[in-house]
Length: 100
Image 1 (cartoon, rainbow, N blue to C red):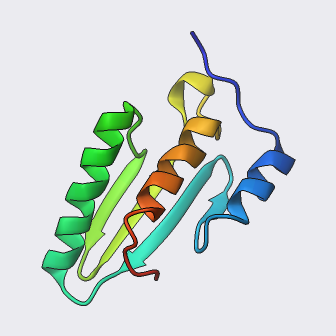
Image 2 (image 1 turned 180 degrees about the vertical axis):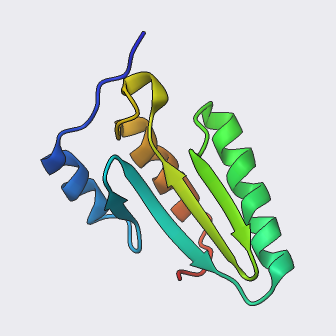
């Protein structure tokens, strides 16, 4: 069963509640900054665990030196942004990690 994409207005409204998250085309993303490489690795692991529990995984989870970029879109919605993406971003924000 396919998931319904959000409207542009719904995406814009949802992003007002997600500090640092932005829309780039049909993807939402955020880059988090950390005091050390290993702190970023720990964060990426936490993101993976949360997303596995939600059965909705990042489109990309990019780990670089002291930064981790997370992006979402929903493949079964035609690679568009859905409520699943917003909920995953909210769950990640609830971890309370530092913002980029």
